[in-house]
Image (cartoon, rainbow, N blue to C red; front, side):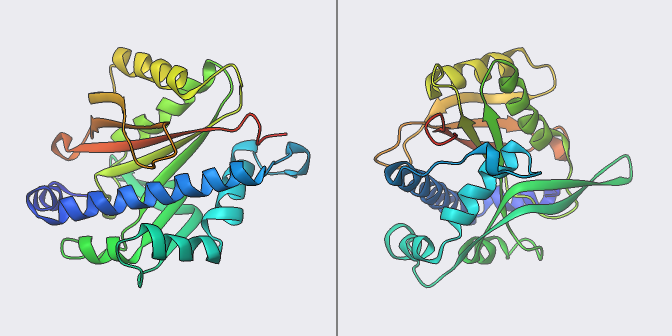
Length: 244
């Protein structure tokens, strides 16, 4: 998003409506995770084939839950404030960014397209609007740094198409010795020491879904476009009983 678009977005009443849409999308993702847990769904890495483990888990969440029509109907009728509009999820969608005049590729783990979101932001951009969700497995201390690399990416990459000042991340916690409180604390420690990520609000708990406590919010600044601020919604899912 260029600085002019960002300024218009911030000053416009669309900002409040867009923030609500992002929250509703996050609530739906949590709803699908809670459904997975209730159903006792499991994923065995012995069945992943040549897929990376992270992609295997991401695909399961998207294919088996987020993109299922009955679940999307639930979103329209029980979560969304506008039931006639649709929501779509795409894996590994390509977006371009440019550094030093050189175009480069970035693949979004889960790209979310919401027809209301597009119509809201359409007044300031002709680009198709999507919310980017990045996913990471968390099993040990090394994975905290890998998780923050996505935050670094959000901060560093000047995308060639419109980018919302909202991002999202999902952690698949596969170690039963860990929990969302531990994970969020360790990520906060890395961000506090970082010289390349400008954090204006470290991770704090937020309430999105009545039956889920592991959602967090943080705010940072882009390392380009006049240091425009953006926010991240973090969802920490316990996967140690999901992964076989």
